[in-house]
Length: 172
Image 1 (cartoon, helix red, strand yellow):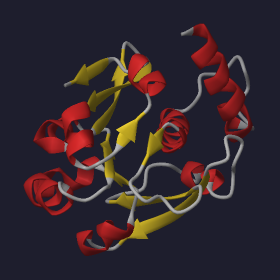
Image 2: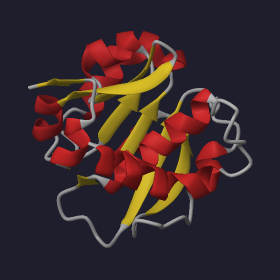
Image 3: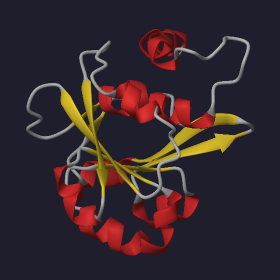
Image 4: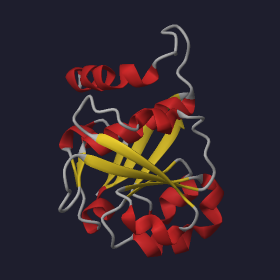
């Protein structure tokens, strides 16, 4: 566990530039770092190369943190970023972050992507419960994540055991 956390900080430290060590890391900076790690420790069927397309559906609360992920490749994974105007373009994504502003559309979103090899991620509990694969949540002022592993398998995604070991909850 200590080795994985050390590896995580080694990979993420350059992404969190401008954040003083004594200061708390802003929530969405940390969420962006988690998204990068999800890209690093997940494999997709027939993944061409090491580029992962990250898409955002809904409001953008990341204040540029996602843009800083693009082109970065400390672990060999490159991120491209796309802001989706609608859900129809989600099939071209490998990771789809669904903002809580889309909670009213949860059933439609889940239905449209459930059979696609798309890693769905949210920070909204209602969306996670509706069938999103990964939920990023604050737990006692610390960011943690839950994984619905069965949904990941249904989407033909392979999540590393290293990633699953550091999850707060893994629903099998």
